[in-house]
Length: 166
Image 1 (cartoon, rainbow, N blue to C red):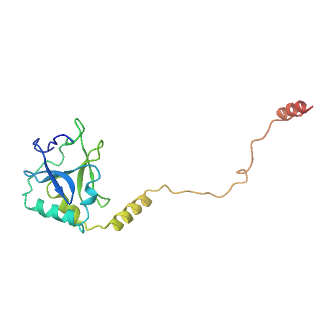
Image 2: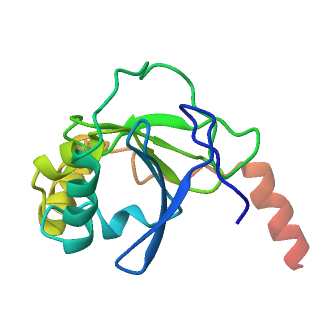
Image 3: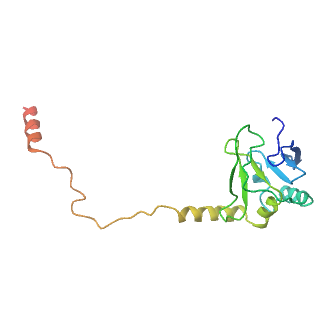
């Protein structure tokens, strides 16, 4: 992996291994870049890795930043990250790269995710509930007497079929 650049300050990100997982952070703004799928090991408030990282990041003062600014992915060149909600509760917004799946958390966002106190099971139940909320209902009407009719055959077709059998 090449040198990663902070999307906020344009300075190189520092590599940091937490519980054997490599992440990248910026001491100036307290932002953290999680390569693809790495956030899953830090997102729950009950996990040691996540708590250790959140505690480390709390020592860095959170600076006021423009959350509406478009960020370039630290890992992919010329790819703009998309801003989305972390969970279906719509409490915390994160930046995710549509190309590599990496996630950028600004200072304080990991603590906000932990404050949700969602377990894996609760998160799955919430996802399922939201999916059911937007599922298209199946509407069945009263059966009609013509529902089972097949297409009428023409008399001419029957005549030709009769002649072909002779």
